[in-house]
Amino acid sequence: MQKATYMNSKGPIMFKNLNPGSLGFQATQTQAVEWAQAAGFAGADLVIDDAMKLEQENSSGYVKELFSRAGLKAGAWFPEVDWRADDSRFYSELSRLPAKARLAADLGCMRCITYVIPIHDTLSFRENWAFHVRRLRAMAEILNDHGHRFGLEFIGPAKSRVGKKYGFLNSIDGMLGLCQTIGTGNMGLLFDVWHWYTSHGTLDDIRQLSNSDIVCVHLNDAPAGIETDKLEDCVRELPGATGLIPLKDFLRALHGIGYDGPVTVEPFDAKLVKMGPLDGAKAAARALDSVWKAAKLQ
Image 1: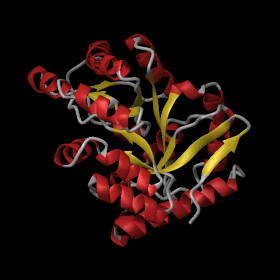
Image 2: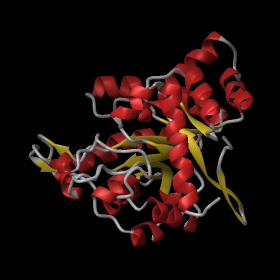
Image 3: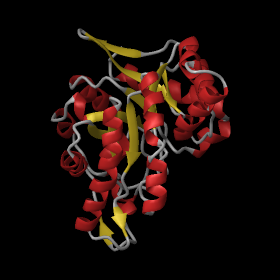
Image 4: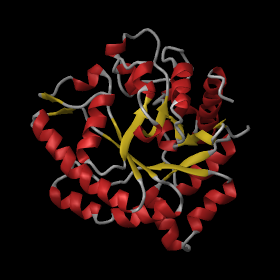
């Protein structure tokens, strides 16, 4: 399978990227690279804690060579910092973030990502806002010191906001507003098409963004026969499976603003898990190929 990278007159943009966890498979860094290469992806996400272990057990540059031999780009990485925990745990894990950021930078993996929960039991919107600014700014400053961008994912489905006393951010504008308030200049969106669709986002919402507003993109489709506001967050389909989410137009809009980062399939599809990791990765790659071809970007 040919690795796909979109091109425009200024050079490459958007590349197919694998995160095994997003398909439902736990993986070491070595497995993630092997599956990505075998399935025809152009990149793979960094499994940061395992990557650090590989460096310690082997030699400096071991993981970089692993990606290089496979002909893969490094996509994005999760900081593995429990920033919602109590102060003791948070600051203990935060102290290890600089070393992770240095390794990721050495690998050219400059996109760190996390997600923001759209509800809370005890914190009002204002209190939760202040908490997020304080915790995420501490992380963003460290990441900025090492040249990383930091992407935040908003959660769109209406059902995700049921059962808690207080609501929180669940839209593009809200999340970008938080990024602006944090003010480190290196923040943007982990932009999942699922959350854009379930929050009733529009293509014009995307066209008003710039490449600097988007750190990473996740792709999937919606199951058939369910009203948008009744969709469950973790019940999705492979891209193009139902055609309910306008992925062709979504990708065209991203192309139009010059998005130049990884595009990762995240379907939470039980059928995919039953295939096993390699066949699942190949199915995800075929789904990406199909929607990219439909978007006429290759």
